[in-house]
Length: 525
Image 1 (cartoon, rainbow, N blue to C red):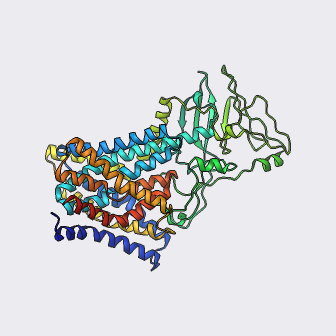
Image 2 (tube, helix red, strand yellow):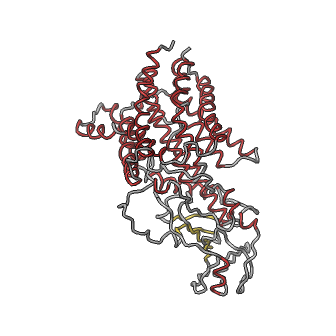
Image 3 (tube, one colour):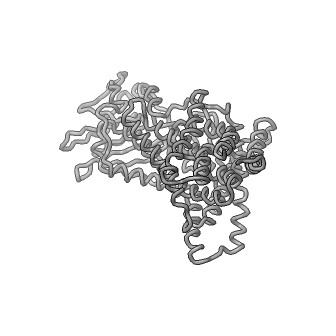
């Protein structure tokens, strides 16, 4: 039976976190104590030092040889079941989409275990539950966040291929990605050059477009990333500017302007708005008189690929088809545009919806693996997690203790992790035009998925694997925690329902306190 003292202990563990968040909110929204530059500096400290050190401390102190595999199985089974249901829904329903599959998976399966889960469950059920939460943190960071990144990169690759190769994607034999391209998130303007090699197959090289390679203008911010300065700006994308309907349907439309928590739990590989030139097809034709056909490629399947250059003096490069920032490749056997005439392009070809094919699975898998790897190696949390796992495997096996001078250095930084994370979240909330960024109806749906669907599914999977009693209660309550911040970071980077995830993080944090206490009381009856 839950007593008043039990509830007080829970409040005593959670209220300090909310105090830090409230102070940050008031400091920006009401007291104007922090400038955007200072907010960015705080977020950079949290991203580069506080959270990685906190993750290392928790993971390194965990004993992997005493993990509760039944509890891990229940949590993993919940995520697998939900993912399978969402993929079946995507296959069966015409109203489904990959974007909604990713968003619903994030909402229903990724709680804020690191910041909220450990202190909350420890106050409710004791130290053993904190150990269980650390195990969840390990699997969530290593497995499920990586899977989420794979889904986002697959979506980015699919959009890139659809735009650049609407009818020839099935002929692609390989992708080569330049080393300075670290993601297909759409924040960078990319160029895909296709080449027919001696083997008669189509090989694609992905690189930054010439516009995105322009040197950035000098800033007086000394390289500090100012996420708050971009809180209310539209981000540039790869979508062709002449087709706004297609722009929205591909998931690039930014219906509400939300700030970025990109610097929390993630160190993005590319920041800011990519500089690019704005090209108008008709104006360029009037300037140059005509647009020359740059190249024509012929092979046994009679594949004709042309890349149109807005500059009449562009060098001719036979054997290579270059896809520019217009976002499509024009196919024709003979093409010459006279002065003042606009090219006629079927909308099916522009939208990439006519006879759309995808490259072989092996080619797509290799491309996605490369991009995910490049994202992971640029994230400090990757290194802290790997080092923490390595130490947790070595220390209990060989009974080695960390030198006090090293552990003290780690502990003093990691102790700032919880408070500074909540403080940074408060800064983010204060910079938003409104807490509910996605509208009331979508907010209700996201809250229902977060606090009802996730706990309900894990209750079923926990019972299925044999969890009972306190372990079952811990599993349900950890699934009812507020939304993981890293899921919003990814949604913002890839521009997929960022407003919904923003609302789930901010508003979810506000309502999580009474909801988790309600779960605690009901499960204790």
